[in-house]
Length: 539
Image (cartoon, rainbow, N blue to C red):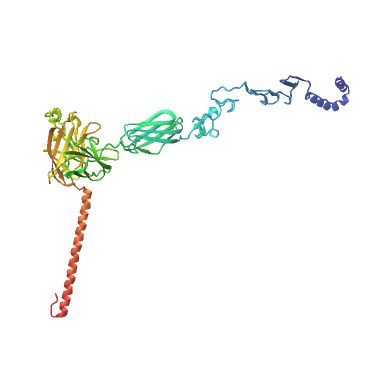
């Protein structure tokens, strides 16, 4: 009422109008900017309070579960938050609102999900793959995000870093190899391999993306070096090529025995038999084993009584009686590979008689020669020296003296019941024989023996005796082994030539010295003669 009266009074006092107008305007402004009316609601869980004209953004309501702030003059500054929700709004627009956030285990770290409340969706899982949807980066997950990322034109990230190769392992055998390695991220691979760094053996491609890689290469050659190189490429096309790598396949187990001993001799003496021989020159030769039998030549190291084992080159057998003894001398290496055996027979003198042997029942009948044995000729026997098969002409074999020689015959050319094959070389000077056995190999592909051919050149009569299981001779083949002096290789010939030239120079130098000495003596005699008799003419 005072306000209305005041206005009326002003209206009637025109003379004071211009003085009162500023005062009225100030009053109106102050009245509009003041709270005209306020009210509030509250309980144990909430409080809501506001002004009837909400200007200035000073009003808010809060409780344990939420906080409410509202403004009229700002955009997106009001907010409502709680343990399970977040509300952000303003007078003009709603910026973001998520109500009832829970972990949905979809491998995507969404707003409100954290590594603590949702580990299946958020944070580093160290699985070898950089997953940006989980929030993995090079800073918080270097194990998965080792690659360098650049911003792409579309707002995404581009992988420009090459993958790494590590933990390379190689597992060779005689005929194959397994190569394993790991990569720092999932890649496809190409493995190039071959006997040289040209990798002409082939390429093995793996099209599946993985971090663990394994390649098998088969049908390799034993005891050979191979080379390989690995190429890996990730999903972004980044690739890397390893350095040249190599491995050596394993050698096959040594199943080759050393050569048979040479120059085996046996002399029957009083109450003993003296044996002597020459050990083979093979580098893997270890010892010899002498096996004795009073029935027939021992066929293997266990076929009789072992009377000597060692590396000596002689032995005296004193445990003898008045009967024939059959000796087989086996040479062997460190791996227990035994030679076919050199054989000899001897009988001592002046010894007690041997017990009589029971008769053979039934009596031995004349042998029936199988057709396979009947067809065999000397050309069916193979002679190999220096890796080359020797030519047989007119039942004669030309070979080098003092060299290793392998003699063999195919297993299929002889009957199954065959027991023994003996090859003998007769010494030309005394017609004594040096004999050895051909023994079937483990694969049953051949009967063979390896010997050192006699060191002296000459013609050695050769015989091949084929016996049955009762030691009866089925067939005998005869021929000649023509041994020549070992041919000197070209390089050694050149060396020998220089030796000869050197000797000539030495001899020439000696002759020159003799001439010089003779000339000096002649001059001395001439001078002495002229001193005694000056009339001697100068000559």
